[in-house]
Length: 66
Image 1 (cartoon, rainbow, N blue to C red):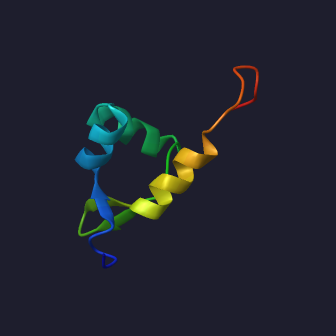
Image 2: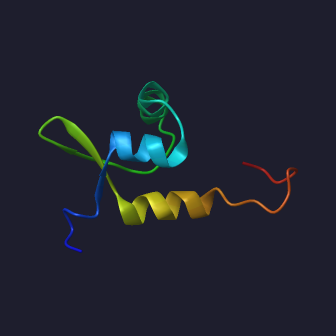
């Protein structure tokens, strides 16, 4: 897979996480979520950054700090 094939659209990430595009846009403005690439005015997410962010969200207990 080349590096462009590893880029996810906002819609693809929304489908993966089952959230709305508005939620993802709000999270971006608040600095929440994986880092992203902005190309020609369009937001893209590298798969490796999404996987890294998901891994950072893993918790063993509900009492763990977020």
